[in-house]
Structure formats: C-alpha cells, structure tokens
Length: 256
Ligand SMILES: O=C(O)c1ccccc1NCC(=O)[C@H](O)[C@H](O)COP(=O)(O)O
Image (cartoon, rainbow, N blue to C red; front, side, top):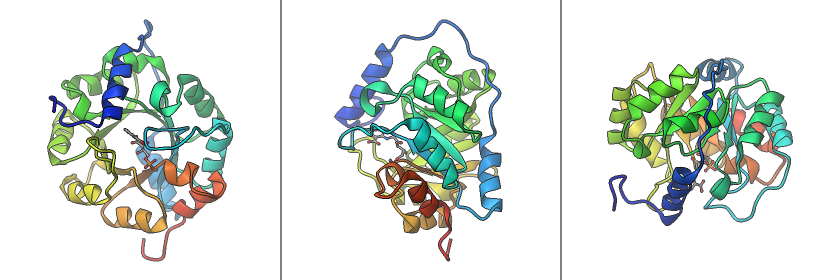
C-alpha cells in the first residue's frame, strides 16, 4: 500500500502513464457551460439528470468501441442527457483530447473532461466545461482546484469515502462526485454512494458515478440524494442504441 491507499494494478498503471504524459506550454481560458444549471434544467423538464460518458474502453471492459464519438454524443443528447463526459485518457480508456474537442463542438450541453490529472499544466491540454479532479491522487487538492477555476473550468471533485469528502469540502469543492468503483479492486458497489451522500451539504451539487446499469439503479441513486448520475457502460454497452439506452435512464421510474 502507498500513500494513496491500495490501488489496483490497472490504476497504478494509469497514474504512471499520466505522470509520463507531456504537458502543454500554453495556458487555456474557458467560458464554461454551467453543469449544475444543466442538471437542474433536466430535472425541471421531468428527466433524470444524466451525465452520459463517451468511453471507448476501460480496464474493466472488453474490446474497444470503434463508433464515431460525435455520433454517440449526439445520440446521448437526443436521448435526454443533461451533460456529457468524455474520457481523454489515451492508454487505458482509448480517449483523446481531439475527441473531446469534436464532441464539445458538436453539442451544446456541458462537457466534462474525464482524465487523471496530477499536475496543473495538464489542465491546459484541453478546453472543457468541467474537469475531473480525483481527491485521492492530489495532495494539493485546493491548489489544483484554484488552478482549474483560474482557467475558467468548473470542477467535479471525485471522492470514494467520507475522509476524501471532508478533504474535498475543505478544499472548497461545490460539485462532488462519489465514485462507486473501489480503486483497490475496481469492483462497483452502489452502497458506496449511499454511505457518503448523507454527509454532503445541501448546497453542493452531488453526482453518483459508476455502476449505474439500469433505471432501478438510477432511481436508487436519486433516492440516496444524487443531483446527477454519471453513466458510461450502461449507455455505451447497454444493448440498444446509445439514444435508446440514454432515454431509458433519463426517463424516471414511477418511484424516482
Ligand atoms: O471504468 C473503469 O474500468 C475504470 C477503471 C479504473 C479507474 C477508473 C475507471 N473508470 C472511470 C470512471 O469513473 C467511469 O468511467 C465512470 O464513472 C462511468 O462508470 P460506468 O458507468 O460504470 O462505466
């Protein structure tokens, strides 16, 4: 075990690749589309607020999705997604900054850059509306949060337990994601969100991440307090078209 706790070999490999990635010299400045408002608008329109993820592959997925990410993104928006997430990590998730650029150009909803950012200069690799910062991997979370906001980004701070939640709140996070995937073994368990959510203040936008496979899972996460749901696999590998899979999740069940 290291200072970041026990990590699955795939996660250690993701971090090693992130440390080795070259950083851009020029600083970006973005005018973001607002994520909390987009989630609220979806809810007001009677939809479950879903952030749908363009996720070509991952350490827990077989094969690579070769479909055009822009077509997938358009299908997700047509299916009612309030916002999108685009993986930009290339080595383990098949993502790219170019994909993010193309998707953001093609849609008008907020787009989250999903990556494993470890240092300030890595923020400058892409223009997105929201960037993900994973509390576990950032000793100076407050510094990275400030650096991201200075560039105009909104920030989703990801946590996995109450201790990380306290660090995120102390650092000033106002959008928090609780990831149901255990970084030690990559197993997803929706109880993770349920155990952390009650401790999140009401004025923080709260997102449930990972392992949401069907409308019953979505309703369960909403009942536990999620303002938004981040869904990748259930939409891109869900059996039907991406549009149909997204609509299935954005349509409330009777009890949600
Ligand atoms: O998805 C993985 O296999 C994975 C492995 C190691 C670290 C992170 C990983 N996923 C990142 C994510 O947080 C998810 O892509 C995202 O929350 C969507 O999850 P899902 O709906 O379960 O695809």
